[in-house]
Image (cartoon, rainbow, N blue to C red):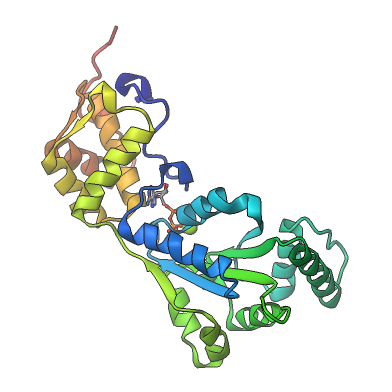
Length: 283
Ligand SMILES: Nc1ncnc2c1ncn2[C@@H]1O[C@H](COP(=O)(O)OP(=O)(O)OP(=O)(O)O)[C@@H](O)[C@H]1O
Ligand SMILES: [Mg+2]
């Protein structure tokens, strides 16, 4: 709606986990380095956690974008289903047809596939997002899956990605065998005030709007930081609304007052920014 007014090529604050927009804060950069190291060292397991909306799936997307040519990736979202269903999804995502197979047959199929990948020198990676939803029983089965190995390397790298509850789950006593196999858990932290500013500038830049003079003042960054607590998804939702408010107000300067107006809009359900002003007709 407002792209033309600001001259963006695309919306700068979408809430999809688009890796092209990845702003590499120290923590996001560390997370990317950690999963890359774990996978390429063939450690067997890596785990990455972070608060809701902090950028976990985006980091995974960036990892896949960077290394896909040398990897064989299966990416599944975990819901609370039993291992057999998860196994089916894993086979499917690796391009294996598991229709009508029982658990033992699926394991055999997967094993043969992983051996072939290893012979071709390809690294197979299973990424499980929303892994905080896995049950201890399913996690234990995943540990067994990671036992597939040759003398010197794991045939399958398993990446567990989830909210902080995943850490609690992995620290359960009954899962200590699994926990021992995970070389540290990497946690993505929220952005600090300086990061918030750089993050917003970076996304505006990628969307191609900087030259068009949309200007965020220093107090606008303070307000956005305060509201979002440095959570990127909340920053995006707020900034998207704030740009709409600015568009309606026919201004390309985003200041603290405008941000507060955007926050009020978001917090009053069913009310759009049009409530405050009537948009001026534009040529
Ligand atoms: N470092 C970053 N750079 C650019 N955009 C980011 C970054 N981190 C998060 N985002 C943006 O924030 C939004 C939420 O990110 P994402 O979906 O990756 O979070 P998540 O941690 O996976 O959330 P959830 O816990 O709900 O699964 C997305 O629009 C994403 O593009
Ligand atoms: Mg996610």
